[in-house]
Amino acid sequence: MNTTADLERGHAAYSSSRWQDAYALLSETDRATPLAAEDLVLLATSSYMLGREDDCVQILGRGLPGWVP
Image (tube, rainbow, N blue to C red; front, top):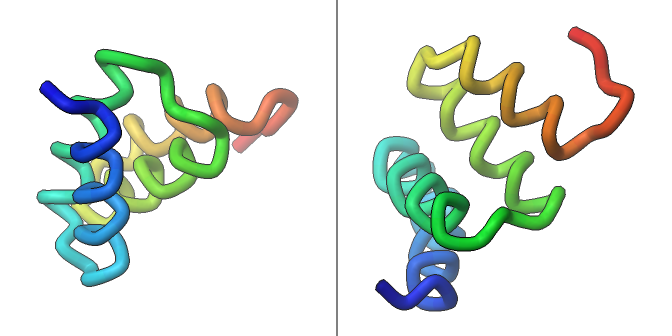
């Protein structure tokens, strides 16, 4: 696994509104190396667009300390 390449592909998928691909690639990258806050927001948005609201809230909580839904 190449986390840099997966992250770049995740960004590209997100930019193209390919939510499932973005979610999968960003999640895989996050498992290997924790994502930075700005990438966690992309992952959270992707999860929300897929109807994974609980995942979205959890991810936002990691990326935005002090954030309360």
